[in-house]
Image (cartoon, rainbow, N blue to C red; front, side, top):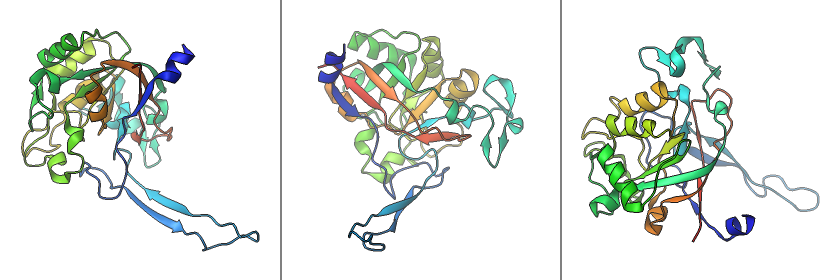
Length: 265
């Protein structure tokens, strides 16, 4: 087994984090400055070091949503009153520190391949039929506790800031019916390429997030957003070893992450 894993191709599924990168306007932006430069302090042996200060929201760049990220009618997953677990120090329950690192079977459902397109149209709603067709095309079956990633091709637009955000044109993603279909497959975690794992209607932005409600609040399924999937899509590989370990920030509602796919070629 170890030799086979060692021969596997490791594909980085995280977008590079830099100031000015595309993100939801709902979250604080990413900022990094070199706080101390080489030469600011020089040791007696001539050595020196540089280091940085990083300021970022937990939902910027490729990141994982904690179950406590979203509430509905004042309650988070499990029917817990949100006000009873939150403070300015973070969440006492359902924070990202409660997420157990995932190392297991990942499945890619490539909806772009179903439609013969490199990138799905803005505002396109992914349906259960799309997901079933993607699974059939790849000849792959979903199993309980899998991580399921949905390919929209949207990560190909990462360098086009306004187009990627899709404030006016919309963003492709699953609708409520597709979210309930995923829950019915027993998935543990889901992921996609856009800034919200949702179909965002043209001009609507993040005004409503029903898929987040279905997955996080009702079903306890964590969400990965802003993934870099186009390299994996180009391999046409549908199943792989998936590694997901967000930062264990106590009480945080989400965390940056660098997911990896190990593909057996």
